[in-house]
Length: 638
Image (tube, rainbow, N blue to C red; front, top):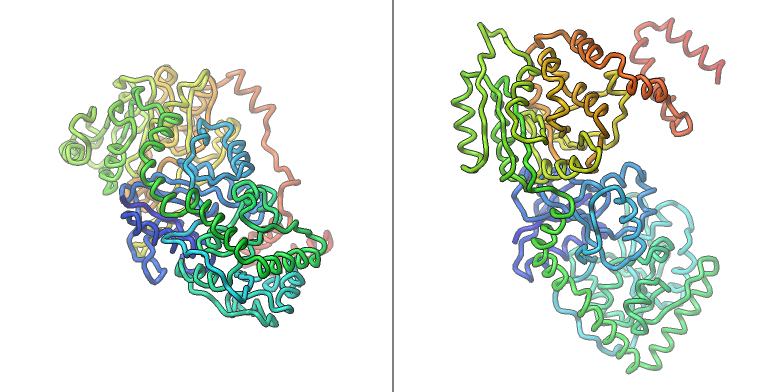
């Protein structure tokens, strides 16, 4: 089996890099293949650089996002590894990072009840159930090193010494320095990190270790004991780092802080200190007592190392854990699909083609991967001169039993378009067999759960429309692709009736019965049908957000194929929409009582000020006198 690991920082030698190296080794051990990709889905080579190859879908069975800064931007089933304390998201921007959790198809956990509780709470409004999530942790591959007795015990520690990075003494500086001064430690870490020398002045500093997935275990084994310290946040949420598992694999005695996870899972097979955040001397004294005990009770200490390694091999050995993930993936995926998708209710998918795009084959291929493809009816409305080409592509890219209707129209006369896109939608709606309807553009690539996910949510009581989020493949002039997410958020009816939001019609799934009432109105529109669909659906029931990113927009392709002029002027289209829903009391009440205002309490005024300055400089910079006058007024006000 092939699977992928998402590396948030492919060329940075850090903890995530080491974890990836270990997973690659473990994959080889169990007969699987691990491919490393970056956040945008580009394959990373042995030199830690992009190879030029990128994932679109189907290349691997699944991908694992190791860090919360990674999100799903391509059509591959993705697990999010739930390893970090939730408060860590604050350092990166909680709202920005937590939304990425929603894009994952499923999650990997390892027994931190509080991390799981945070995740479960975040997913409250979704259909996801994390009860049976698969286990995965930052563990170690290969055969563990058998525990052995050593005469000269040293305490292994490895790290970057982040406090030195910030030019501050830091909460651990005195603690490590006291251990170092007495020659009790053997410290590893980078010789230099950017412009800082992290372990300068530490006599027991022993250099850096290769990030190869195995060298650290050998170094730990040579020390005889390992210091497993976790941060305050890790202890609060019962989270641990890879140090715990690599120390067990190295066959040494562990001296750990009082982390609840370690105490629960490893019991009295390790030695503990009661960590005192305010008095480092108490921590040092406890460690010295443990080292003295180890020196005087070597047989008992050896037994501790054997017991902790036994627990590790039974529950946390990476080869075993990864093999279980690979083996159980298909079953777990089927369970998630059952929870979140409706794969048996019919969906009519309307595809309107003004010009055949080079991306049409990708759109058709993505339809062919849908979980509910057996219950999808594809209705294509196209020009009669394009029908043979389209039929050929349909036959090539869709299964033979895929239900397809092609409605041929005379759309052009002497290069002048005769019918509106709204007319195309209207006649397709009349032909639709199912109540659940999506209208899609040919420059969209749909993730395999797109239609079944929306369909399930559209079945809920009083839901009249579901909308989803998307990401963007932006093809640049040099042929490369830049991938990023589009806004992941709710929409407000006042923004729709005021036409202040751009709405991609491919985001929507709605009910045929709702829009049939407006089929004559739709014929008047030419590109702004999404506003009518959203307003009509709002009047018929409730909108619902899917809480997922479920398709990709190819920006370059859109620029190439959607350049045809509208038959109906923009201003008239908006007027037709206003007229169709004129004097609807519900709309009047909502828009009157929900005037959108900027909440200054959530605005970063410094950032706003900088943006305003740049804006004014760009707009009036060529008028020096006016710019000088504005500056004088600003200076007086501030």
